Length: 111
Image 1 (spheres, helix red, strand yellow):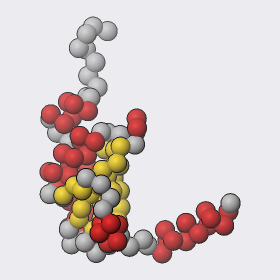
Image 2: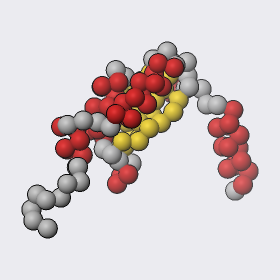
Image 3: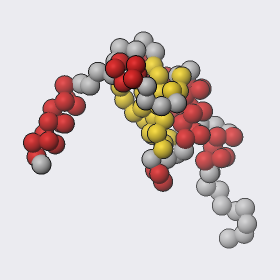
Image 4: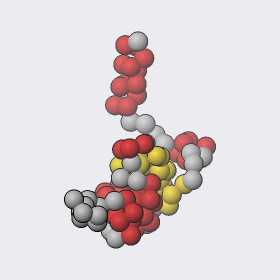
Protein backbone atom coordinates (compact mmCIF):
# COMPACT_ATOMS: atom_id res chain seq x y z
CA UNK A 1 0.00 0.00 0.00
CA UNK A 2 1.45 3.35 -1.01
CA UNK A 3 1.78 6.23 1.42
CA UNK A 4 -1.47 8.13 1.72
CA UNK A 5 -3.60 5.38 0.17
CA UNK A 6 -5.32 4.45 3.44
CA UNK A 7 -8.83 5.89 3.26
CA UNK A 8 -9.78 5.27 6.89
CA UNK A 9 -10.55 8.67 8.44
CA UNK A 10 -8.48 9.57 11.47
CA UNK A 11 -9.74 11.59 14.43
CA UNK A 12 -7.92 14.64 13.05
CA UNK A 13 -9.66 14.28 9.69
CA UNK A 14 -13.04 13.84 11.34
CA UNK A 15 -12.57 16.93 13.51
CA UNK A 16 -11.34 18.98 10.56
CA UNK A 17 -14.28 17.78 8.45
CA UNK A 18 -17.47 16.60 10.06
CA UNK A 19 -18.48 14.99 13.31
CA UNK A 20 -20.81 12.02 12.92
CA UNK A 21 -24.31 13.42 12.34
CA UNK A 22 -25.85 10.77 14.56
CA UNK A 23 -23.70 11.88 17.48
CA UNK A 24 -24.67 15.55 17.14
CA UNK A 25 -28.34 14.63 16.64
CA UNK A 26 -28.28 12.37 19.71
CA UNK A 27 -26.83 15.12 21.89
CA UNK A 28 -29.32 17.66 20.55
CA UNK A 29 -32.21 15.27 21.10
CA UNK A 30 -31.21 14.60 24.69
CA UNK A 31 -30.81 18.31 25.45
CA UNK A 32 -34.18 19.14 23.86
CA UNK A 33 -35.93 16.40 25.82
CA UNK A 34 -34.52 17.45 29.18
CA UNK A 35 -34.71 21.25 29.18
CA UNK A 36 -31.08 21.69 28.16
CA UNK A 37 -27.95 19.83 29.15
CA UNK A 38 -24.32 20.05 30.17
CA UNK A 39 -21.63 17.59 29.21
CA UNK A 40 -18.50 16.13 30.77
CA UNK A 41 -16.09 14.43 28.39
CA UNK A 42 -14.02 11.52 29.71
CA UNK A 43 -11.11 9.93 27.85
CA UNK A 44 -11.55 6.14 27.73
CA UNK A 45 -8.39 4.99 25.99
CA UNK A 46 -8.49 3.33 22.58
CA UNK A 47 -12.28 3.36 22.63
CA UNK A 48 -12.25 7.16 22.39
CA UNK A 49 -14.25 9.46 24.61
CA UNK A 50 -17.39 9.16 26.70
CA UNK A 51 -19.73 12.14 26.68
CA UNK A 52 -21.80 12.17 29.86
CA UNK A 53 -24.85 14.38 29.36
CA UNK A 54 -26.68 15.77 32.38
CA UNK A 55 -30.10 17.26 31.66
CA UNK A 56 -31.50 20.25 33.52
CA UNK A 57 -34.09 17.87 35.01
CA UNK A 58 -31.36 15.65 36.51
CA UNK A 59 -31.65 12.79 34.02
CA UNK A 60 -28.34 11.69 32.55
CA UNK A 61 -27.12 9.57 29.65
CA UNK A 62 -23.95 9.00 27.71
CA UNK A 63 -22.69 8.88 24.15
CA UNK A 64 -19.36 7.75 22.73
CA UNK A 65 -17.08 9.53 20.25
CA UNK A 66 -13.86 8.38 18.62
CA UNK A 67 -11.78 11.03 20.40
CA UNK A 68 -12.06 13.88 22.89
CA UNK A 69 -11.67 16.39 20.06
CA UNK A 70 -14.61 14.87 18.17
CA UNK A 71 -16.65 14.82 21.39
CA UNK A 72 -15.96 18.52 22.06
CA UNK A 73 -16.82 19.47 18.48
CA UNK A 74 -20.05 17.44 18.58
CA UNK A 75 -21.11 19.16 21.81
CA UNK A 76 -20.31 22.57 20.34
CA UNK A 77 -22.35 21.81 17.20
CA UNK A 78 -25.22 20.57 19.39
CA UNK A 79 -25.12 23.71 21.52
CA UNK A 80 -24.30 21.87 24.76
CA UNK A 81 -21.80 23.40 27.19
CA UNK A 82 -18.86 21.20 28.19
CA UNK A 83 -17.75 21.27 31.82
CA UNK A 84 -14.02 20.81 32.38
CA UNK A 85 -14.52 18.43 35.31
CA UNK A 86 -17.12 16.97 37.62
CA UNK A 87 -18.19 19.93 39.75
CA UNK A 88 -20.21 19.33 42.91
CA UNK A 89 -23.18 21.30 41.57
CA UNK A 90 -23.36 19.15 38.44
CA UNK A 91 -23.14 15.92 40.42
CA UNK A 92 -25.83 17.13 42.84
CA UNK A 93 -28.07 17.81 39.85
CA UNK A 94 -27.88 14.18 38.64
CA UNK A 95 -30.79 11.96 39.59
CA UNK A 96 -30.13 8.24 39.05
CA UNK A 97 -33.10 6.23 37.84
CA UNK A 98 -34.65 3.47 39.94
CA UNK A 99 -33.26 0.92 37.46
CA UNK A 100 -29.74 2.18 38.10
CA UNK A 101 -30.16 1.99 41.88
CA UNK A 102 -31.46 -1.58 41.54
CA UNK A 103 -28.59 -2.65 39.30
CA UNK A 104 -26.07 -1.09 41.71
CA UNK A 105 -27.60 -2.93 44.66
CA UNK A 106 -27.42 -6.24 42.79
CA UNK A 107 -23.69 -5.68 42.18
CA UNK A 108 -23.05 -5.07 45.89
CA UNK A 109 -25.13 -8.07 46.96
CA UNK A 110 -23.43 -10.31 44.41
CA UNK A 111 -19.97 -9.80 45.94
